[in-house]
Amino acid sequence: MRIGIFGGTFNPIHLGHLIVAEDIRENFSLERILFVPSARPPHKPAPELIDAEHRLEMTRLALKGNPYFDLSAIEHHRSGFSYSVDTVESFRSECGSEAELFFILGIDAFADINSWHEPKRLIGLCNFIVMSRPGFILEEALHFCTSTFGIRAEPGSRQIPLPNGHFLYLEDATPVGISSTLVRDRIREGRSLKYILPESVASYIISNGLYAEKRKF
Ligand code: ATP
Image 1 (tube, rainbow, N blue to C red):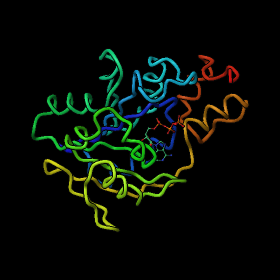
Image 2 (cartoon, protein in one colour; image 1 turned 45 degrees about the horizontal axis):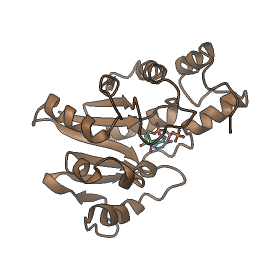
Image 3 (cartoon, rainbow, N blue to C red; image 1 turned 180 degrees about the vertical axis):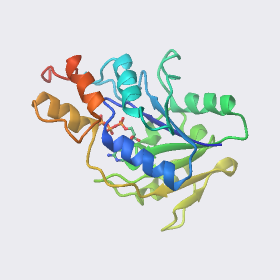
């Protein structure tokens, strides 16, 4: 089994997340991708972060219709901050040693991995797929490999050996200039949400009045 783990705050989930996840599923022949909304993200305690239950439900709605995409509420069932290292370890023991795990993240998130909880332990737990994202330079991941993990990566390399026989892959995904920040801004400005996130998610946001209040700062 080749299983992708795609974590995020999904505040809210948008078409960018879905398009690049489908790219990765195809390109890496993954049998499933588990979307893992972060219940209590240590990094995004911003006033804009809405209730975990809403983010979970929106993710569930967004994944409907793709048999390869599954929702995992693993971080909702755990207390304390939602650390990726704990999540990957749980999947590791749940899926058994036969399963090949691929942790999927954008280059913007990877660039920040130094500030994550126990990044050196995390990088030794499974394979990593770092995806391109408009506005960021994918090749900078090579620099972060060296500066953060002391892993020497050849210039131009797209497959970097990690500890424990795993690999870190750099992958070009469809460039989609959508972010959750953009979605939240558009809601506050009363602008259209069409073609930015699934209609079911847009309806959920509107019927629950999410993200609508004005900025407090
Ligand atoms: P925000 O704007 O609130 O920071 P976001 O759009 O980056 O949110 P997250 O839920 O924080 O969304 O992202 C989860 C993961 O998805 C991260 O690894 C991020 O890099 C990746 N990601 C999000 N949007 C895109 C995109 N348009 N293209 C490529 N990767 C993306």
